[in-house]
Length: 165
Image (tube, rainbow, N blue to C red; front, side, top):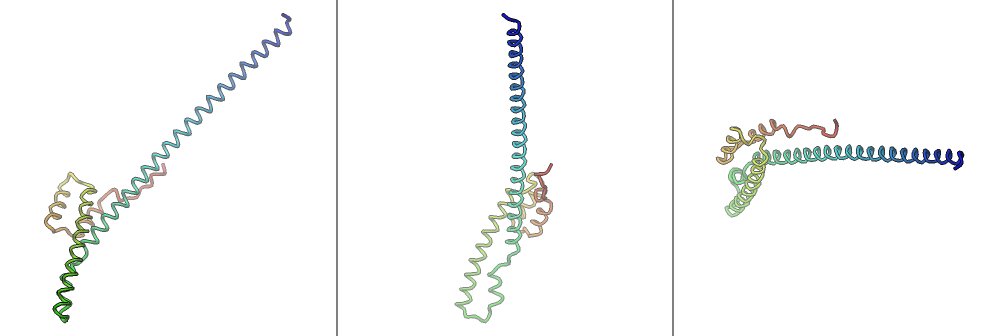
């Protein structure tokens, strides 16, 4: 073989090897880059889901606390009818008392629903405070101040922006 052909063959072989090495390095960098971006996106997605879950829980807790306080604050309609309607006919009086009793029953049902949800979401279930709350609830001695106190000390109601780090 001629020496010029050998030189050309060696040069083309080295060129081909250089191209292959460059392609492998380029492909490796691309794969690593895609893996890194994918990992970062997954971490961001996890942080966003955690923040959404905390926001959902905080909103749900606010709804539970608000409704407990609202229904504990409602006064009975039956007592109102007894005190304020002395000048109506007897039939009208009993009709209004019946309606008041019906509204009172609906309010008690709603109150029980929201208090049961509060029991499920109570922040300190294994404490004496929870036992006291449960006892007051069973005895019908629960006041809105008790619920306000629990809400004020519930750490899950604090707003934390979990999307920033």
